[in-house]
Image 1 (cartoon, rainbow, N blue to C red):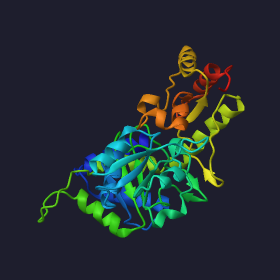
Image 2: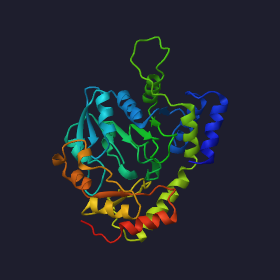
Image 3: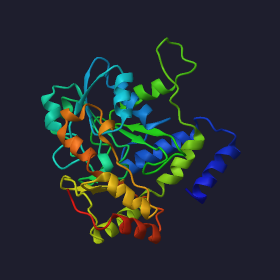
Image 4: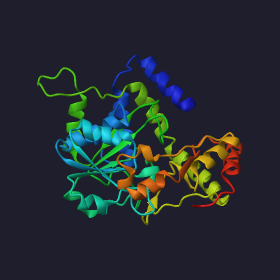
Length: 333
């Protein structure tokens, strides 16, 4: 973050209105415009997890069987449980980090959460009308498929603006979007928790104007951030690193949220990168999978053979050179 974000924060502080207010409304409008949605079809909230919970709540997830990607973070399972649903973990597709829709259909679920992992878009199945689909685009803001942004192709789209995501609203924040106005109205009604004359249960998931103003400043930079990530990814490819090239549908334009190495020994690769002062991680380890790894062989194989290397836009030329140096001279499993 830089001068634009500091000015945005200062503007809010000078206004003396820091709680949910005009900046939140402006952020919602800006996101709708970016996604090609009509104004009023977005609800800003305090986190991506809150957005996912609200999406499930508006879809009546209580007592429903909900397909979740087993290769994902615990927030997905937590949101399902908080909404009263039953998580049904589903393995990834062949040569992909994304959920296998055929397995989800075979599990006879009532709702599907599809997360475009690492920013790799998913082409949603035609069964959307029969089975609602929540696009959890926490890692994919800016990705497109067939020229359309991710997040607008399912029943509800969810975004996270946490500190490490494609853009941040100052550390925490989230948003849900939908072309179905009644779902948006239900989510907004839930968010407006105070001073109500009914006895419905609600919770304070509001975003502050301070966070929204920072998010708006970041959103103006998103296209430039996307270009920079693609430049870095292209540099890694030209260096012939053991980059994993997962399967992606024709017409997919990933946002390059992560650059993933596929290696035989993840610990050895991480140690080698550390020697070049590069911090790398296993994106999702086998113990982090949302079910017993033995039940999901493809996800388990990914968890044991993948390493995520830095690709954030502020990397310098020397940073990139250090990554390349540390990640070179290894073989695919």
